[in-house]
Amino acid sequence: NATPRVRKIAASLIQHIHDFARENEITIDEWLVGLELMNEAGRMSNDRRNEGQLLCDVFGLESLVDEITYKLASDAKDEPTATAILGPFWREEAPQKKMGETIVSGIESKDRTWMHGTVADFRTGSPVEGAVLDVWHTAPNGLYEQQDPDQPEYNLRGRFTTGKDGKYDFYCLKPVPYPIPFDGPAGKVLQALDRHPYRPAHIHFILTAPGYKPIVTQLFDRQSKYLEDDAVFAVKESLIMDFKPLEGNPQAEFDLEMDFKMATF
Ligand code: DHB
Ligand code: FE
Image 1 (spheres, rainbow, N blue to C red):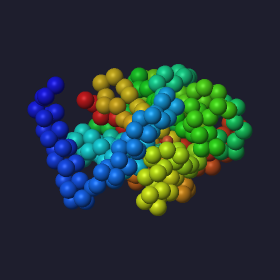
Image 2: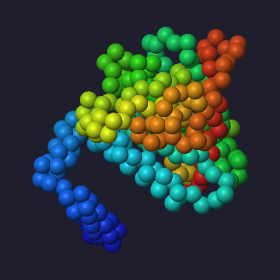
Image 3: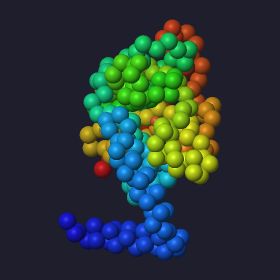
């Protein structure tokens, strides 16, 4: 419907697209290149491959929208946990797990990580009960489970719900840097701009809790390459973490501690 907001942003979009074409004297042949990129992204997109989002992401659009959304939402000096882009590989209905369980199955690794911490209200510091931490990351081969026929379905995904103390803990892997899929339109854009397709090692999260604003975010490994030149511009300083060596736990080699801070609506 033509609400005032729809009218305003449609008019602005049309103005900017026209200005873009005029300023650069875009020809029919050049416009067709862009059109084919969009059509190809549409044809490629399916349950396993979110090419439209990938294309937006290499242009930095999702990262910009994340920044704008977060800025609009932030209203205090002390800050809730910073957000970061969702990316194309989140899946609904990740397995519900109990605290202390692992999201890793069928992978031998010397990078097993115990992740733990507290979910708290950023204003009061009180623990948040009933917060759901939805987590996902790639296997050491750099592939998410839906990209990789050799992984069990929903591998390296899980949802954990906090109790009264707001605490959570689970086992995952220290993530690896890896290239975003570059055999489609997003890859063509990167190649045309002489850009690499790599992302720094990261773990994704969506944190939700009754009465609180959801937090979509990622945590990055301080030791990883590509923190300075993430192909999709998602890194924020406060989200760069230290994976510390863990002694005396036969289930993990690394310790990752993260306290999430949420804001009420
Ligand atoms: C993108 C984001 C990711 O987290 C990822 O793993 C791959 C691609 C993206 O923004 O396109
Ligand atoms: Fe990712």
